Image 1 (cartoon, rainbow, N blue to C red):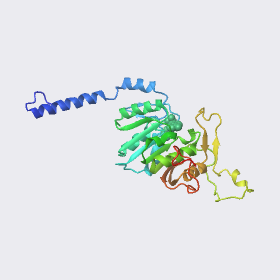
Image 2: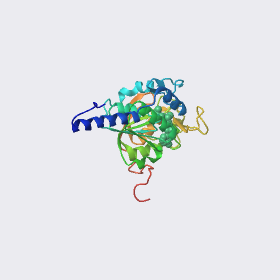
Image 3: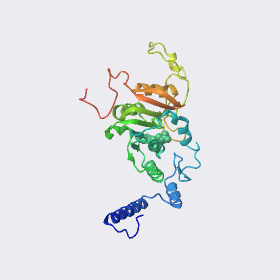
Image 4: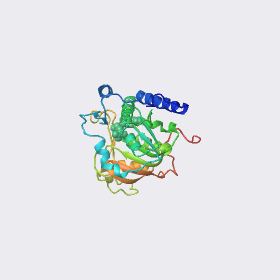
Length: 284
Ligand SMILES: C[S@@+](CC[C@H](N)C(=O)[O-])C[C@H]1O[C@@H](n2cnc3c(N)ncnc32)[C@H](O)[C@@H]1O
């Protein structure tokens, strides 16, 4: 606060500025604890169990301190310093990874999710934890072309198996928003041991398809884990093959189902362009 009774014009201006700043700070101040508990409750259930100034958003989470515990297992595989870098968090949920990237110095973080309730959670969490400059936007991963910008780091964690068109989503990320790193995670089921796959097999040779480690996507027609938004769950071989097939070279398997990848060329793109929207160039 400014000093009372400042004598020079310069001092008075200074005092007013400080008062204004103080008022602004109070206007944006996070809610006190009782109000915060009410807001957290009103936005529940939470998938991200966040510690908002001593109040946990999902104290009974079936995975405990999630995603904090998970992140601690793979965080060393990510750049420690993101100063000046841009980050796109696709399917940000309550914003855990967006805030973690901000804490590493990212200059710009755009966090998108298809679900407005999760975005409301993320806005509350960011306000309480003091992250004022993360941009939150409601958007589907299928619409990333509309962003019109590429990012140094794209986070695509825990979304693939919720999509009816998973390879299309990876193609769109490659075509429109990824510039360098992709941090990817997917639930996996089936074999955790990728089989050695030949470049090609004769038509009559059917046995490779029965190998547990052949790349497989398990189609969920109804629900899995009481969740109808699960559609395709890859085994480990399929998750890794889909990344390569959509132009992401795996640099590190950072946790059992987390990959740090670098954008590269899409295999066979010289023969057939991947199905990206909006269409580029004239229709064939
Ligand atoms: C399992 S949570 C993963 C959250 C977070 N990325 C993580 O790894 O902890 C899946 C998130 O993806 C979002 N989501 C599902 N389909 C989406 C889509 N088509 N576009 C954008 N977000 C989507 C959901 O709303 C949800 O927040």
